[in-house]
Amino acid sequence: MEQICVVTTVVDARSVADVLAAAAVAGRLAACAQVGGQLDSTYWWQSAIQTTAEWTLQFKTAPDRVTALVDQLRANHPYEVPEILVTRVESGNPDYAAWVHEHTRP
View 1 (cartoon, rainbow, N blue to C red):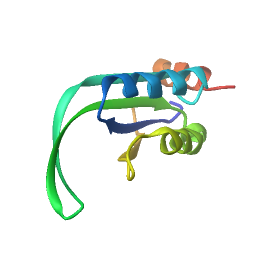
View 2 (tube, rainbow, N blue to C red):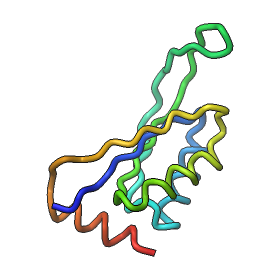
View 3 (cartoon, rainbow, N blue to C red):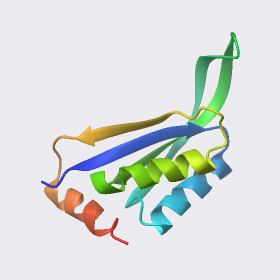
View 4 (cartoon, rainbow, N blue to C red):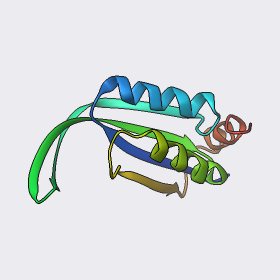
C-alpha cells in the first residue's frame, strides 16, 4: 500500500472550514477534505482557560504533498497558532491509498 497522511485542524466557523477544504482539494494538496460537526474545545490561551465552538477538518493526502498542504493551511488559517497535526497511516485499503495518490498529483 502506498502510504497516505491525514492532516487535521480546527477552525471557529463552518464557512472557514469549507473554504480551507475546497482550496486544498482544488489545489490537489489533498484528495479529500472532510468537515466534521461542531465541537467544544477547552484550552489555555493568553493565560486563561478558554472554551470555543470549533469545526474539525481532516485532509487525506500523499506524504509528498504534506508540506505544501501545511504551508497553505498556515497561510490561510484564522488562528494565530493553529493546531495542524499530521498522522501517517500505516495500513488501510490499498485502493483508497492509490486513489489519494492519483488525486494529489498536480
